Length: 264
Image 1: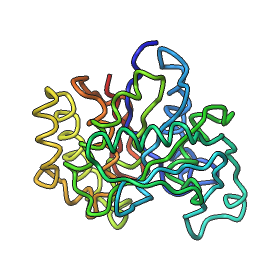
Image 2: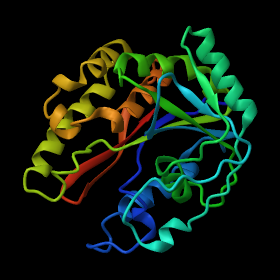
Image 3: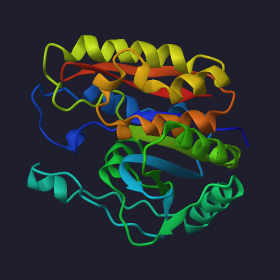
């Protein structure tokens, strides 16, 4: 079995891929890229481990249910978007292994058997894996949003890549909601996107050092007034180990540049 890559994927805005938008094709390039993830892998994944920007807990917490419901944690969208389905199975054995790896690395952790998959999981995964055929586990961010802590979480989870588990950080490389659609969004997002592109290609020790200091990057705090949508990148980078990263998708959406990253 070959080692799978890790990804930092954009998950769009709410249920954007499953509703009308203006302009009509605003999210289609992103959806098209998401649909191609599985075909681009060297082997089908045995399971998915998704770290979503939309779940924060005191300690990293794994969703341990065998059949998680969907958590419709978006507001003000058309009624049909609250009837979406994505019945992929959970994987309690993988959830337990995630906890064991975190514990072995000295990282306190917890499990939750009741919470559902939030839209940072089921919206992009419904596009990327529409048949819902791959067992899936979600892992939370850690409150405090420390980039070093999330790099360490990723490092602890790296052995899963050799077991056929596809690790995906789900966020958005630009997430300034007040700036989307404004004339300032494109240059601001391009500055930060250029920094991401350069940083992820560095040797991993330099990469991690720069990721820890992301807030000092050009356009960093403009792109992320609050960093929860960036931190899934840290987990993906930590799990990448020495594997270099590269931007594998880039598009201008609602006036801002948004990217996806692959390591390995």
